Length: 318
Image: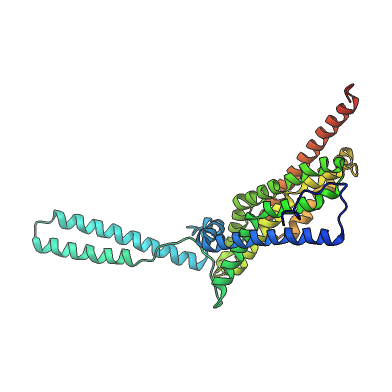
């Protein structure tokens, strides 16, 4: 295996069997890393599910909600608060009473109100519901697999880079290496942005939209599919700078052409945001804003790189 994974130079000539052997070894390494990460995520599945459920929990019970289930939870909470208040009041009266029998009656009544307060169910954050017999296992496994894939992504990308980079010339490699290094950073940045900004706002809007007409119960498989898709798609969409810099550095598109195509870019970003899950105004705007900022930032970075290249060509040392 060590000889198979030796660094391959650009001018090396490998047979088809050697290429396939190297590819097989790298795939085995990727699979082995994924299995280890999956085992860790399944072991810590409670923590993983808590992290994924947090955007849903942030859309907590609202006092102004018209959802019948939320109204029931609010009523139960107010009953508990009233019971605790009544218990404190009766204890105060019993403590100030001179008649021992009256004090005993006050304490007994206060205890009954304490029991009412303790019997009231706690208002817990929203959680996905499961309907099928095996859905708790399948939902947990699906979320753990997605988390494991995110954890091993640097290893997967490294193996992919190591396999394809020998096909690049020295000039092509000088362009490709920085761009490839940006891919995992931008992907993680997109996932973090979606987790803290896009997903909570989308869930809050969608779950509370017209909620007076529905008993809103969110099934686990639907929620996790939605959450994983939004996180993954946002990570992929954050690769816009990589694509733009690759096109400009290879001379396929110029910075001037990119600047002239802003209106078409905005239209394309709107179409992409519309095709992503959660076709509501909040989710679309949350997706469009960072994509356009990345587009403008990519144009600025490409312009700076072009200027640096021009100065290097014009300098006497060149």
